[in-house]
Length: 143
Image 1: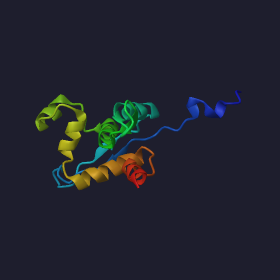
Image 2: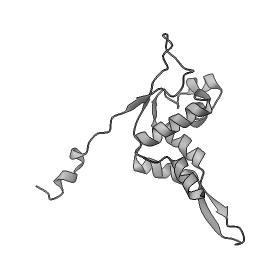
Image 3: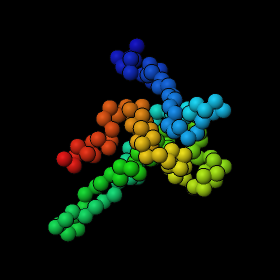
Image 4: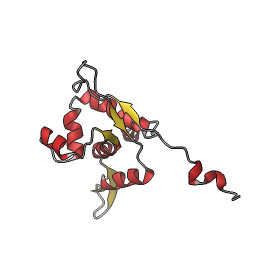
């Protein structure tokens, strides 16, 4: 038996999908808000989203010097869209029904109330293992 046997993939706990009703504007026949299904994203997916959402901004007073800045809203949208299993935000018919072309645009069209969207973002961040929301970290860094 290997000294690392406890770390083998076969011993890793499977993360179960979660459910959450992000908006009161999409309901079933009884008026109950529809639950969406969410999956856990991988650390690699998360790093890819962060890289896609990072831009170089010039440093004031230092020509040709730049610093990275994460576009937090775009990052959160990508993380949420990738987490959603049901409804399928990549479905062309569903996108067409809202007149949008990307999963992120569809997400914003379906959950179009700002308060509900913020609650959804907080739910997904906690579901993905972030105890403190990304927005809280950004605000903390600003102060």
